[in-house]
Length: 161
Image (tube, rainbow, N blue to C red; front, top):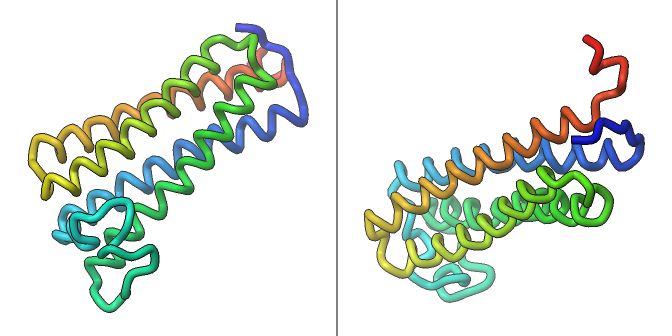
């Protein structure tokens, strides 16, 4: 892996990499809360709508909890998509970063679809377990990606330590 220090792009790459890790972890925690609070069907079995509406009534705590999980996924998507676009456009020669970023984006798309199947199958335990397993795998990939980004963007003086 090349160790060329790039200033402006490095900062943005680090923001997307670290943002991907933190937001993915937070989304997993929110997902755990959805499960333990029995809010998995707070939006009903309609997907991507919530209770058949884009903006559902927020009178039920289960709706708020489930909807927060769905909406926070957008934050994760922004970080992972940003990371992947930046990897492909500015860091194309860094094969590991491109591969890990692309893998996390593809896995996130599959995860969203698996979330849909989880809801539309009334929280089938096998599908729910697969949803959690894939979330854990995505977290592992974005952590690996962030480690590679950190290594890539170290200044030469930092590498000597």
